[in-house]
Each structure stands twice: as structure tokens, then as C-alpha cells.
Length: 126
Ligand SMILES: [Zn+2]
Image (tube, rainbow, N blue to C red; front, side, top):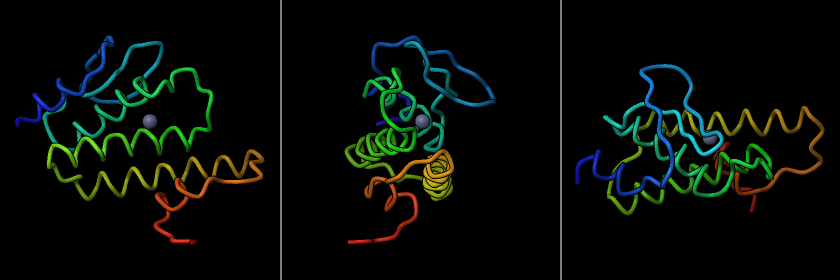
């Protein structure tokens, strides 16, 4: 299946605004993303769709938890569609969630959820 077909198959009913560069995000039922021409862009695209699908637009959970859930959603789509997550994307996403965890700690979080922590830092604490 082409990347374009994978993208449209997994696109929720949202307004999508395509940009050529800059930061991708989801806000108020609109996702702002690059066109999913590569696996890296598809990951990014589905990540923003995931925020909308998972109801993250209301911001009710911690940032790192939402980012982790969005990534998990995309990884499941990639697994089902038999697509490999590009190495740089994998590294960048984990690092980003690590940053979000770090920020949560800096802002006084008393506890950090284990699953996102393991995902971000690749550490098995069990
Ligand atoms: Zn995100």
C-alpha cells in the first residue's frame, strides 16, 4: 500500500492544513502537518492525527503521556501496515518525550509514569 493510501486510511475527520516546513501540531480540530511523502513525514502526520483521535486536544493529561500515546498509536499503524519506523524518527521521538519528562520534573512533577519513561530512555526498570 502506498504511503498516501496509508495516510488517508488513518486520517480522522479533521481539517488538515499542509505546510512545507515548520512545526507540526494539532489544535482545535485542525492538524498542521507536512504531506506524508516519506515514512518520516507519515509518522509525523499520523502522530498529529493521533493527538486528535485520542482526544488530546483538550490537554487533560501530561504532555509526555500524550506524546507517548500518540507515538504508540503511530507505531501500531506502522506495525499493521508493515512499515519500518525510520531510525532518525525513532531517535527524535524518544528524545522529545525524554525532554517532556524532563520538563515535567522541572515543573514539579512528583512522579513520572513508567511506560513513557521506558519508551523515552530505553531503560527497563521492572
Ligand atoms: Zn505530539
